[in-house]
Length: 79
Image (cartoon, rainbow, N blue to C red; front, side, top):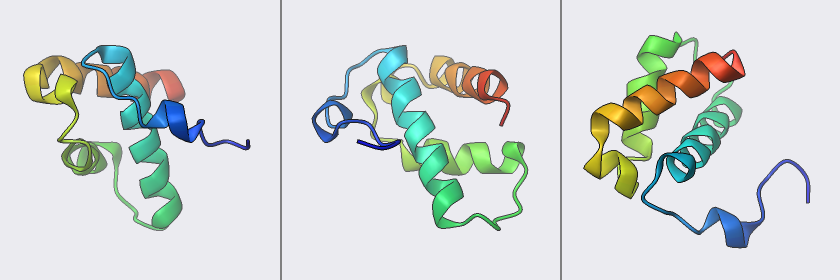
């Protein structure tokens, strides 16, 4: 199926950090693919991606923890 997750699984959103991390990763990758020459540093890009996934239930209920998960993903993935 390539690099994209199974559409059935991608459409399942849960109110937990794992689900948020998957959604965040996908939004980050999609932004990078759609605008590879954006020239933004991670500090500037992070709020844009968080806004892009703002409807995720984990981000709505735990905004500080969601931001920490996002920052951890950036460090983990070396982005």
